[in-house]
Amino acid sequence: MKIDILTLFPEMFNGPLNSSILKKAQEKGIITINYINIRDFTTDRHHQADDKPYGGGAGMVMKVEPVINAYEAIPKNNSFTIMLSPQGRKFNQKFARELSRKEHLIFICGHYEGIDERVRQLIVDEEISIGDYVLTGGEIAAMVVIDAVARLVPGVLGDEVSAEEESFSDQLLEYPHYTRPRNFRGLEVPEVLLSGNHKKIDLWRKKQSLLNTFFRRRDLLKIRGLTKEEKILLWQGFFELAMLIDEIPERSE
Ligand code: ADE
Image (cartoon, rainbow, N blue to C red; front, side):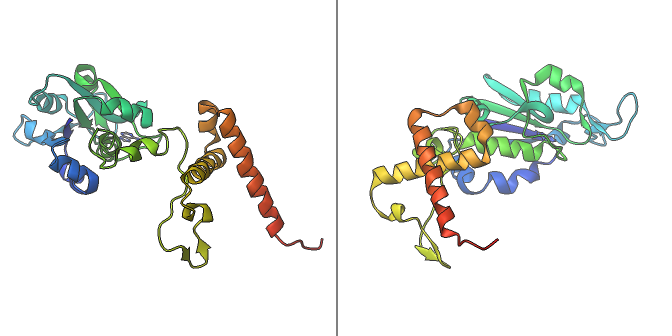
């Protein structure tokens, strides 16, 4: 997958996109990320990328020419152009999966009060918001989208199952994870995970996922639905939780 990022602040991407899994994906050549500094495409001698808004008002607006010039300098034949803004379509895992099938993504990161409307009209295929809050610019949002999309590109995660098994791919939250030591400050790893019985372990994990999702994100379950077996498993989980009531000593009124 080819990724081009149009930004006034390319240095912002350094840490997040050049560490860990994304770093390896680039080293392996599975993903290529290019940074295009919009300021390099300004046409005036002051290299001004923004200007005062027509009609007045506070703040500055990013100029149309430098963004379009930068965009036109990118070699492309089958690209998809994304602009980050709080007005966009809300980003989620399904959307990430859609984008992971594209060959070439171009991200436009706005700053200041916004970008000249004609950028949207001329080159943007989809506007994306990462949530209902306002960031200082599109850069951090672009990193969030790139991270979520890149890990779904085949070969990026060493272990292919982990992308599939995880939260949201089955539309459930994750079960709890444990590693050594068995006992940390009196907190024990659940016995079943030490049993070596993989059928039992899978059932336990599924039950924990269902309980987690039920208590934290019932909205997701309502959309997803539950199979008969899943409902039974959840009932079992509730029952096991209810049993914990007996561990609490009674006190007089
Ligand atoms: N730019 C500023 N806020 C944003 C948000 N919530 N999502 C995407 N881009 C943004």
